[in-house]
Length: 410
Image (cartoon, rainbow, N blue to C red; front, side, top):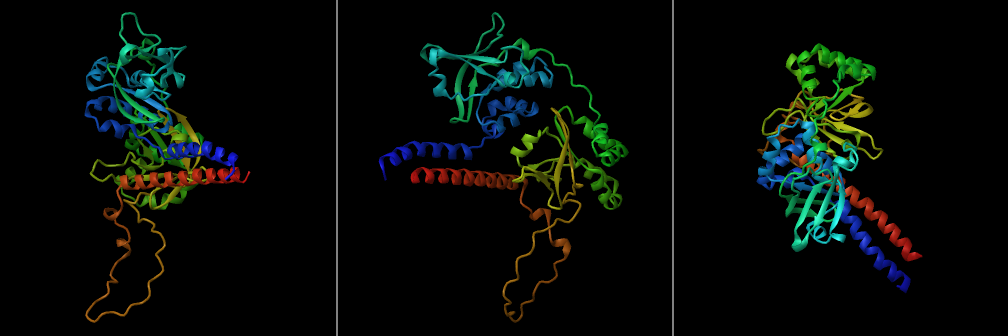
């Protein structure tokens, strides 16, 4: 190997390792904090305000967590959920600060943008957090609009670090900011059926209007976050013969099946592939009425129920906390309809029957799929995540090897 190639190899290998580590890195803030009961309230409100999914989808993030005692003081102020989201957004920094970096700040102080600032919700510089490394390793955190007489929060300990993607550290108290704590006007009321009428989902909207309790369930879930997948008119027309034969409870369930009690933007749907619960999901040990969200190579998002697979055709509405997408098929849950199985493998070579042994040819079509024998939703989600990581790993690794080969040939 020539001297120039050795130099290239020395420079290239660290980039290779860094790329692979970042490709394979994934984090779930809810699971991380669940291992520490003292942060259960903070964890709960990250989920309730939908900040958990925002944290999980970002590559580089620092979470300033507070324990239940500090959260109790915040909860006692009875903020609305939207105001609570603003306050907790201050505790999410859009940069990486591990314990080592915090104690080695250049000039002993730095300003970091919080999610409150990065999303545009904070006026001026009020969404920035001032981090100061004092003598003897004492680190403090304060907002730019810290009220007179208020004390900054102090660094307590590191909870979890994935350099240089995610850092979860504990601070002594919640950050105080008059701007973040200001009352937030409630969002303007949204009429979901009117939105559907205007964007090619009139038939599905009519079904909701004809089932008032289902329409109410959709509306009641908007404030907490809701994603609706409404079949286009032609899809509803094709499914109507089956729909008319359903019992009233099943009609309600299948309509609720098209709503997911979480707000998902299109970007989140593409990055958070896996099994999702719906408004029809029960509270049993094994969730029912779920389906899998998958992002295809051509960036088409599909919904797989194990009975049919629908593709998202268009965005009807996307404004947190509500998103509505039109889909090309009526979603059919496996709890109501027979699952479509993969083609059976070619029959094995015929073996001579042993005397006295009877063959079992009594299995019926009804036995072709059993929900009890299906993999759990967590297993399916984990397999989907593993598959995506493997694909990403292979793609990045292949691209790097091609580039590396070109460098060596140079």
